Image 1 (cartoon, rainbow, N blue to C red):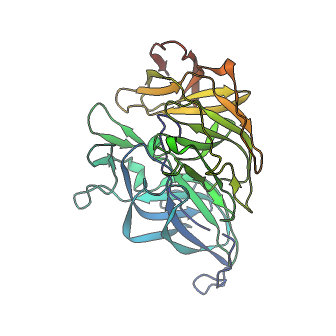
Image 2 (cartoon, rainbow, N blue to C red):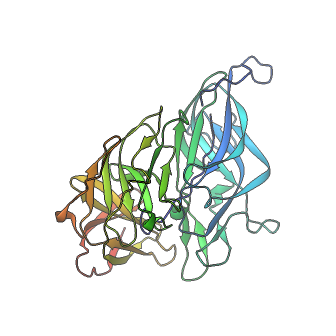
Image 3 (cartoon, helix red, strand yellow):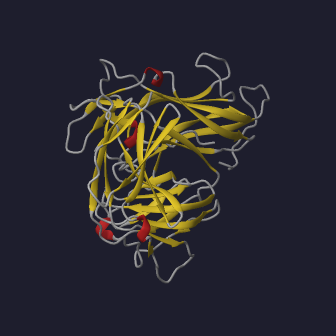
Length: 387
C-alpha cells in the first residue's frame, strides 16, 4: 500500500475473541456454540470516499461449500449497512453485528454486498480525489459473497475476532479514461487473538503526515498491513499477526525507509518511534515510471532490495480498459535500520547500491513476470504481455 498503491481499505469482518460469553447451545439442541460478531475498519485510500453496502457476513466449515449448500451461518444486516471505508484508519473499527456459531473450525468466509439497483444506485460507489461520486461496477459474484479462505477455531462460550481487509486502492480500478470504475475485490483475513497486542505504533515526521505517505509492515516483500499517519505523524497498524516484520515508510519526495526485525506479539503493542523522536526519511527526487500490461486484469508492483531485505515500494493500479499503470519512485538510496526497543536515537544506513534499482513485477492468473529497471535515468515505458 505504498506510493501509487496509496492506500487500502479494510473490512474487519467476523469477530469470533477469547472472552467469556454466555450460553453453550444453539436453538435448544445442546450443541456447543461460540459467538461471531463483525466490525469494519480501513487503512488509507487513494480515493476521497469508497462506499460499500454490506448485507451479510457468512461463514462455513468447508472451504469448498457453494452458496446454496447447507451449513452456512451468517450475520444479516437489516437494513444493509453502507459504510465509507476511507475515514476508518489507524485501527478504528465499526461494528456490523454478531451471531452465534456452532463450535468447530471454519475455513470459508463470504462478504455479501448489496446490489446497485434503481432503489440504491450508489450502494457501492467511489468518489475520486476532487471528483464526483460514481457507482462501482461490481462482479456478479459479489451478491453471492466475496470469498475468502480463513482458519477460524470457534470454541464453546468464547468469541474469536477475525479482521477482513478489503483493500480499496487495489480493489477499485478505473476503466478507460472516463469516470468509470470497477470493483475488483482484493481481500485478506486476520484472526485477532487479543486487542492488547497485534499492533505496531509510532510516528513519522509531521512534515510528511499526508495521505500520500504510507507505512506498512511486510513479510518477505509482501505487505501485511498498511496505513497512513494522522496529522501529528502518528500511525497504528492493527491487526498484525504475531511474528517478525519489516516496517516500510514510503512518502512522496522522500527516500524509502526500512526497519527490519520488528516484533509483533499478542500481549502488547510494539512501539517503533515517538512524537519526540519520529522517523524522518531524507528528501528524494522522484522518477515517473509507466507502462502497460496485457491482459488489463493483471497486477503490477515495484519491488526493491534494501541491504538484503526485499520490500514492496509501490503498487500500480492497472486501468481496466487500457492496461496502463504508473509509479513515482525515489531515485536516491533507500535507508535501513534494525528495530531496537526504546531507542535513544535512530541510525538509518543508506544502501547506495540500491539507489534507483527496482524490479517491476506483473502477475496474471498465477503467472509472474519481472522487469528490472534503473530509475537513475529516464525509464522507457515497460510492457508486460501474458499469453
